[in-house]
Length: 586
Image (cartoon, rainbow, N blue to C red; front, side, top):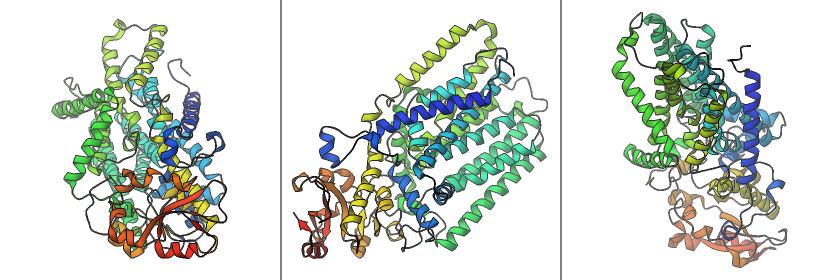
């Protein structure tokens, strides 16, 4: 193997080991027990982080609930004896989780390992393709390249990418790997002088996976089909072959979307996931305004993002203005468009625009943008490689200089980002993991307290709680409850969590609402007056009707472990029954 080429297995191993080490660090930091005033806010957080198994974020536990019910023969249901509902965000990820469950694997560890392998593989694939593009447009004699390593360093230097792609146990890692692999397939076609059948089939497989992995995959599949067809046209100048390639991919995409939609209509009764109806906004304008704020906050989190996005926009505009000479055969010398940088820039800008159209979200570290995070730096790197190729020997090539450049880039990437690996322990990302862990603890507590007739419990953060609780879990946000998701009403409020309907709630009237664990009756957490409770439930606790039906109370079941009490809003008639049994109320 040439010294100018990386050894793929060695590179994959090195990148995967780096992902593993940083993920372990992130897990320990993100699940560290709170301290000081945070203890009073979050209630009970027992035990050391080292004693805990990774449970993922709360939304990941939603997949675990559906996988368990599906594996146990109940079908795609939120509650084992409840309605059929598509409250999960990825069909393909659910299939993977269910397979692991059926195989009896330790679910969280298996998913974490899979995410690390997917992320390491995707970064290796992207780094090697960037290197091939560099050799095509830059200096092929460079022994120590900066291009591929820069992409990897950019991806791993800050925590958001690995936290959401690996540690969260969500489908984000799978989705990012699919987007990266799709981009690599397009780039490979751009530098090829033929339409390779295996490459076309790879693109078709990725297109099939897209709508199965994320709802926005219905858009991305069309984007990939277009880019691949355009790559054939630009590389070969053959319109018929380009149309044939585009047609194959378009048919694969449309067939997948049609099959998935048909299944949803026949099984669930609706053409789109229940999460879509629960998160639908009052209008597109409302979504764009909220999504615009989300994008602005993302760009402000790292000054380099402004430069990278500006370069992507400039590349697309320049390409649109100067593309015609590049379509001639043979290509005109006046063709100055970097086709690879243009293709990746289109992918980046689509990836930037989709969350804006969706209205953004409330999760920290910008989960929606982490799937394209490694791709954001590729256009600047490719354009830099093109410039380096033009300058040739005028650039310093000594290995010490290039290693110093990599170290300087690493320092720049780390210091420019607002979030850091060192500060992850105090980032709000802790909340996402803590809700899942505490939800499981509260669910287990209720199982012990109500072994015979578990009450229906209404919760906001549902995943961890529902995975542990054996009774009925009422999803107050409507993601796993069709009546709430489809009820018309004002959807203004917390992004993606504004579907709560008092009318539907009063029809259901769960016995307990938003339970929490407290060490004493005097330690009711301010959670019950915090905006995370008030905003999603639209201030229902201040309504006279709610106060007539429910009472904020603390109870001590006979089975309660020492130092742990159950707080929450209890339906008054249910609370009276508890007082008549061995429950002490405060």
